[in-house]
Length: 226
Image (tube, rainbow, N blue to C red; front, side):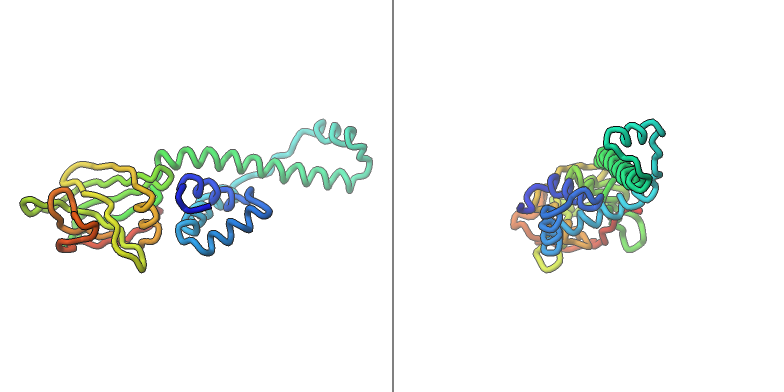
């Protein structure tokens, strides 16, 4: 699989973190993770969010008549055999509960929780923009707070700064209020490889070259929300 489908990568990463991706598929995914920073980022994202959820699961004890029915159907008459079946069934129930919880978590997170954030501030400490990236929806939201006046005929443009590669434009930042946009695959991958974003002053509508042409006025770190 090529890293051209962020939604499919996210689904596989969540299954990998949960432990439901197994056998040859899991080994292939592990090799892919080791060689692809974007895949590794999504795996770490789900590991950090699903592991606390799994730790909070409590074993569920099925009613006694369920075990008696299993024992009759499988002709189990010895306690060691019955204990093995009970252990297996209990483990299976935990996996099912974890899977259901992860699915609910997936849907709620994609709609309401940012996966990456950044605060762009002036030297005085005043917040200029707050950025939120909703990874499951590939959506970037920028909140303008105390934006200095732009030079006439210019805009503020946001850039991802992927390690070892050229900056990638993430679009024009709002001078006031809020803006929201869906990121392209190239922008999503650039963000996955970035630990910082930058803002430059560009002609109205943004740089015509695909690279910063004006002064870089802000640089801010990216991080996962706490």
